[in-house]
Image (cartoon, rainbow, N blue to C red; front, side, top):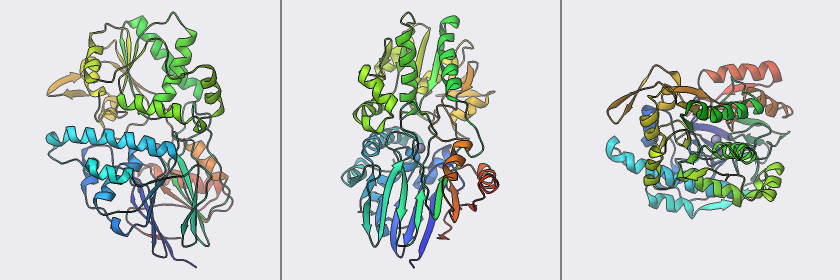
Length: 451
Ligand SMILES: [Zn+2]
């Protein structure tokens, strides 16, 4: 019987930095190698030495393109990893955009923060020649009696659950999982057989608002800008949420042709990512594919303007209200939304919509908390604008959807919890024991568990 050990080097009792090492009789498989995010202190952890030697890793499997899952992959190569990275086609394309963008942000910040970027474009190049593409449900043989298969995670385009088989065990890594009835991606796959399930817990203590509520809340805010002659700022995450929001706006604008408030998509990365959605149609759900057959571009509508250059971004300011600006980053730790905050937050007619979870410590979480003066390059900007949050566009399953997914496993030996806030994990673990009767445990950082 092989000796199997699992050790987490990130997203253990926290929400970011996903990095899990499975050692099967000395064959080392790394699942994800993501960035730590949320506040400066957390961010600095990315520069600390890795707690394992990348030279000893045999293979890497990447679940999806979010930065907190892929952000430290180039660092692996910088520190001597020479192997391959398995991922789905959309994940490979999206990760390239995400890491390029992140390198640019880190380079811009480098002088101010007095720390060099975490990786160079040469490290990124080493990663980009090491991809191995596998589609969902394709069995990939890793040798030594070990194989894996990707399943659809229903999270963002190309996101995968990893079902990994050793000679005598099945181990399932959830990656990040989504719920049902997402506007674009297909519903999550259920899996019935697993000895161990390593499950994310981001929303382990919360229930999302339902689909109609979230669309209504968004469209109410959109309509309000004409009544108040104001500016609506929508903080976006470049992948999935942006495309979901564009689809809702597309449907509204195309059925309300007299509504002519301009929408600025002020994020070159989001615009790039949107193109990949159009290239990877087979990964979209049937409804989205059908709509695309009729309406060539479900992400474009009258009055949508994409601003690529920073010059065009600055010009948005000279357009009088009403107007709507979608920009990143999602938690406003960088990106163009910072400048829009500087311009619009002090006017109480304006409104900010946060599209999802704000990690504590981020600027987004502070503005959302209210009673806060935003420091814009040394100038204090009082937060007077209305501030609101819509969780329903999150690509993460809420507590009900997580439990529903876990319930489909027949007799797992143990559910191991990762990717959750330290306060949320024990609550979710208890819920699993009570509702499903499965044994459950919270994984601790750098603490090997025998499977
Ligand atoms: Zn994710």
